[in-house]
Image 1 (cartoon, rainbow, N blue to C red):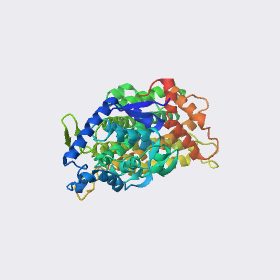
Image 2 (tube, helix red, strand yellow; image 1 turned 90 degrees about the vertical axis):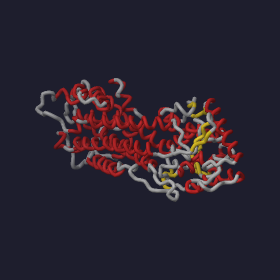
Image 3 (cartoon, one colour; image 1 turned 90 degrees about the horizontal axis):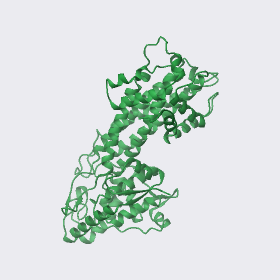
Image 4 (tube, rainbow, N blue to C red; image 1 turned 135 degrees about the vertical axis):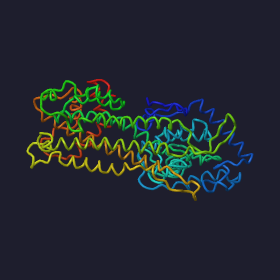
Length: 510
């Protein structure tokens, strides 16, 4: 039976969003939210009849906010705003992003500050629950006044315009609704603006990115532990006394993880009395580097948690006092900064991983066969895997430049500061995906290196990871198509198979 998530505007959690966006969970609107929505809509209808001047309801938009709209034209205005604002470009966003946008928008509306009709919100939920996925172009939002462009493309399908995917087929919005026997909406006064004036494009991307980042942290610790063992490193640098002397929480957690993963390692025990004083930074300082990223991701997770349960449209309706207020909750600055921070922190996980990959494949640094392969020369082994990792790391360095330091005026200088949060969120997700590939390459190299220690066993956690990898990717005795192996390990990483196997052996990783 498919799970159902009840949305009320206040208690939406990241795990719930992932269930909806990626695992087919359905949504429903809480009874309390229905009451709030009804109250706000009655007020809007009354104010429109009374001829009150309300931004975007009885006036134009942006620099045209001083233009009054007649009562007769208020409905016509709503369709026009969707059509005029749907100016997106580029590739369409993935299904999980669009489904996340829809769920987040519904949850925002459940707070009762938008003034939308309940039927409109229910219709959006119906699209989501029947797997109608609007075509949302990636480019066009400046991250202020809400994500107007992508949200307009999403909302168009409600009125039978735009495009959508249904059962994997791309078709017009009208065809999509017909395929599910859903009649198109006619929007009431103020609903067009309310549908598009929010941060849900940014927040959807940010939610998915931070979820994947937190998953990746555990795998980075596992990959580093594999590299530590096969590079004949020491566990001394993970002694709790070192990390309690500088008590950053992420650093402490990463050190504990690496101690757990490498416990009972015959490889490490075999060189206990060697003359090496200290390991290279990429091994010895893994907790400090990984831990700083852990802490950054948790900061972003907190920002995301607030934004998931916020009202981000303008104007806002406050039913208790029977007031409407114009403000700027649509401005994406909190998300822009958070996504830039996430991207920078994620890029560092890739940076340090790629340097460990280099140590693994370089015989002068590893003491292992060149490029981790027998019969080198005839075979290139993992030589080009390191090249590929290096290319992704260099790409990340460009992508990690903050988008939030930029701004450009829009709407005839009425909207004279924007966040660029949409781009911050898009490139942040690209950095996460690049880093998943890099960590996958390190795990692949680590598993190959373990096979070269034919008489010694790795630690309990490391062996658990090795066995999962080997269940999908065999030992590389001679060259074969490399990209397939990388892709298989990335899939194991993304679905959490490797981390779960390790945790089954050594307990929870932090």
